[in-house]
Length: 371
Image 1: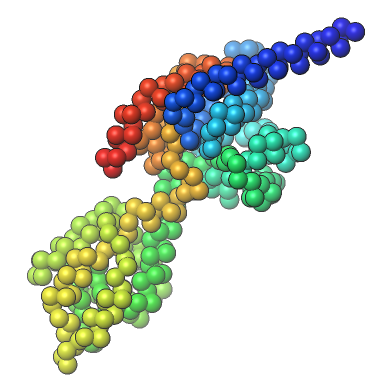
Image 2 (image 1 turned 180 degrees about the horizontal axis):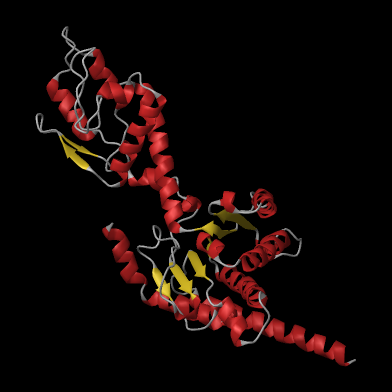
């Protein structure tokens, strides 16, 4: 009888809590609501130590809080939620701790596919973000299975950063961008160097200002030489190198601009004079306009390219560091850092974060328009 009464009371309080949240969220919705929340779940181990719990119990308590936070976010109308689940740096922890975390992650990933899970209830599409090759095969296979199973969900998006650091994301994005651009310009065979000079006579190569010829860059060369030149080229682009051809005065920009002028290059090739010379005016104008890599090219190869930039990052435990999390995406983003450890996070922490976002909303909108 007592058990039945407790069950009824639990249902009653649950219903009252749901009604209270609904009223509160309706009031909050009168102002701007963040479209994208990002969470750094800090303090699980400290919580376990504070509560004298066994190793790993803090992370299990943290997962329970995560489920509550996700439910609150989606009830509030947030579309994207990103969580920092496991950093590449975490692999440096003790092997037993890493293995316990991997076992917990595998257990919870498999739980996402259960019929009664939050994912199915709210129609959430799940992405696993990071260098997934670093994960063990069971975890990687489970992650791929969840992504495939939720691919048709369109209401909300959950991005789980695992085996992730922002530095790793940026490096791989630059690498892939350079690789794709290199493959794109290879077939053009435009005889153009990246310093802004054009080969004047067939059969004669002109130095491009960085110690190798146009023929070396685009003509017949060994694989080793091509790899070396590509590496130098990519490094120059990543550093934003600006080089000037002293003779012609043409400036070559390594990062800004686009590479959509190859049709014009080919037209200039067709307009060569009998001596094989390309008209200077057109070529110099083209070379000024023509550059290699844009920011949008790099951003399209980011792990996080599937979602807009976060509006607010919440890091528990009072820390204000980003810890190598979404460094590229958070340049115009609010950071909210409550003192509570992650397992101690509650609904009111989320409400205060939304109120803080609304208070600073006009400032961040002005900053976005400046870019």
